[in-house]
Image (cartoon, rainbow, N blue to C red):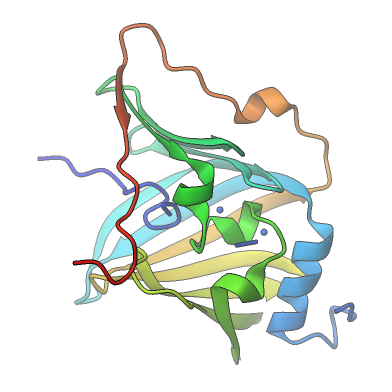
Length: 219
């Protein structure tokens, strides 16, 4: 049976927020804050690889992404099969054209404290994540972000930056799967039409309303 990437795998349900210092002197956290302050919108391509807890690559995909803060993003898987993850700031949609199935959820629920929010959310980074600088690797400054609240879809995300831009993300979910993302050809600051972040399900689509998460501590 073919599996599909979970919405932003967990890069969505995982794109809550995407000190002024020069790039040559800034550590990872400073560069991340610089990015959040100045990168109001952007677009590019992505490559994604999912690894099992054993380290075996189980899934490879690529496509295009766009974001405009606050809370608007478009994450379009093109290969090996098509899937669209999109938010206009109010509603988060996951669309599978082959299954003709659209799942919707409030953006405030679907994006808060997720890796997706690092790209497209507001500048409330410290409200949702605990940040730690990590050793440099692969020519990048690295930051580890851990969600402050339990119950999310991932345990940590490592963010690789160069010249105040996010180039890599490494996400570990609750099942110890690791998702590696490369953001390529990122263009920042170019105007993006609001229509890019709107989605209307085609006629005949099966629409599913995602259930809100249970309150923390209930069980």
